[in-house]
Amino acid sequence: MAERAARLRARYGAGPWHLVLVTAAIVLAGWVALRVADEATAGRMLLWFLGAVIAHDLVLFPVYAAVDRVLRTLVRGRVTLLNHLRVPALGSALLFLVYSPGILRLGETTHLAATGQDQRPYLVRWLLLSAALFLISALGWLLRRRQASSKRSESA
Amino acid sequence: MSPKPPGVDTVERSWRSPLRGPWLTAIYGTALLVALPLVIITGLLDYAAYGPRFDQAFPTNVGWLRLPAFDWPTRPSWLFRVTQGLHVTLGIVLIPVVLGKLWSVLPKLFDWPPARSLAQALERLTLLLLVGGILFQIATGLLNIQYSYVFGFDFYTAHYFGAWIFTGAFVAHVVIKFPRLVTALRSRPLGAEARTSRAATRPEPPDPDGLVAAVPGPATVSRRGAVGLVGGGALLLAVLTIGQSLDGPLRRTALLLPRGRQPGPGPNGFPVNRTVAAAGVRPEQTGPGWRLALRGNGRTVTLDRPALLAMAQHTAALPISCVEGWSTRQTWTGVRLRDLAALAGVAEPASARVSSLEQAGLFRTAILASNQVLDPDSLLALRVNGVDLSPDHGYPARVIVPALPGVHCTKWVAEIDFRGRADG
Image (tube, rainbow over all chains, first blue to last red; front, side):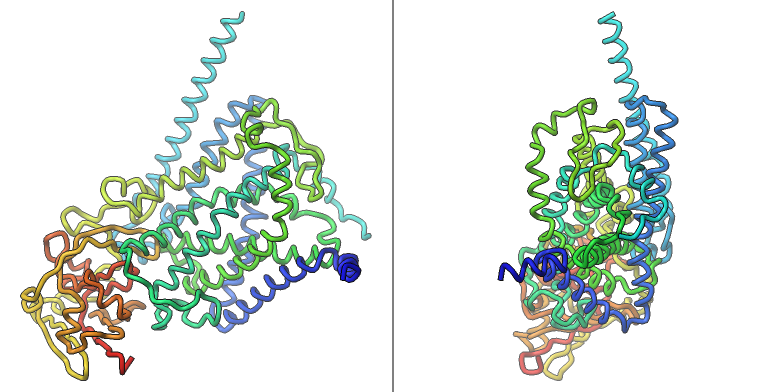
């Protein structure tokens, strides 16, 4: 038995449990795919499934990494300032990502039919929330600077 | 081994964050490991709440991919409010954790060679199912709760089957990586990490998975800072989402969600699901000429609104909770469904089919199970909070049943067909 497991490990690259688990996950996904394949919109579903991975790994991540790189160059080593910009920027971006259907007014008619209300307020609210995040962060940064400078003058 | 394509080394050396490493990945992973099963289970419960026995849970044809059949209970009356609210709220709150987790393992995507063995190749395929699955579920869920159907496919079908693809890959991933997770968590005591400042933050030692950067730069954030950032993002989303499940002034805290808004003043000023205009129900259909038809045992009893108001009235404070995760508790007054069943000559119905005046729409009829008809708080409501129902809330009469999904609490009721045990 142990010898067989060792042979499997050598040829397959992992133990028998690994093979069972990944096979089960793939078979389940395949079974689901076959069930959905009859739907007229199956192609769109697949597109969104793969598109979500591409949108995150090859669009969202490179974009936020690049923005961060630009920010780092701009602040030139002032790490506290960098983080006081990063945190509200991330907060604002996160809110946009999650609530963009309302902010961008995607689905005005379905929203109206469901709730009896339009999607107008969300953009302004998001802008105000973002402004508040940046403002709070800026105040925090100023406070830190004052504390740091008073400490410096004490020790001087 | 085949030679590396150009750029692989450059990519490898461009990962600079000194925070990436097994410990940080394990922290985010642990949060997901604890919380995601709750999202999965509440999601499956919501499917059960729709009544798959009556073919009214969507998608209808799921084979064995569902919980064992059981009758959705009517008690506690806040059951669906909690399961669905938890599903949606937790699903949203976990988004920053998912993004943080993906950030922490992103270098793995560019590994070269892509797979060193068949095992690795298959595992990477399941990772595609895992990452695609979670992102697909998040995207479709977020769009659905904000009534934006830009994806152009049926939400229920996509979200339900997407969940199973994700769950399978999730189970495989958790079991395979669990020993790694335990080792990683043990490698750095949480308390010590919580006391480590940015200046003292050093990269983790090189790991077999290659998460730790080959050429790490200086730390601009401590590890506790990175965990705090993700936690802060989760908290921000929690604060802006939970309001849609709360009543009173706190509802307004859901600033960016449709159900954070108060639709008008007065006793009928609570969230509407599907307006009378959208349902296409005309005023002349709900005026004095409106009649309720009760069917049972081959007979039909017809009642107008004064006749219903002349019957014994019962008042109950019950939540109305929707699949989008929002809910609100209101005080409803009307006739008990079991009294109507008795009037129709079926005192012990096996089920009841409620039809709306609405001509189109997925939810113009709903079937109630026996326990849902017989619960003493199950009503054909005529009034809410002491006044007549507004047209948007289902005037002249609507169904309200404890713990029943909102869309099955039929509005603008035209007919109730009580079915006995025999014609089951």
